[in-house]
Length: 91
Image (spheres, rainbow, N blue to C red):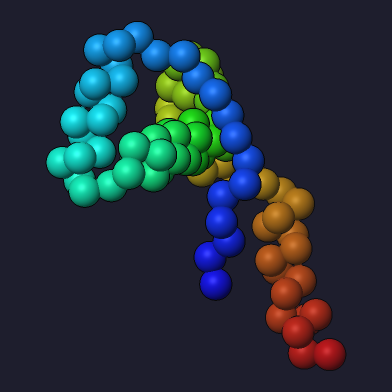
């Protein structure tokens, strides 16, 4: 069951903005309120999704990609642990 909208936000528009919004909502056979509500909600979701993305400086990202392209280096501790694996899993 859909709940009725109860919150209100007022915004000032230039006359040409209002006319464009009303024309667009009419083309979609929506009320102006529904059109505005859906457009604003979609934009808010887009902004919040973009905010959640991790942004790093370009030089850091380039360095990360370069490091991933390097051949793997031996890790003595990991090698020793891998050699003990058969002994540990037999128990």
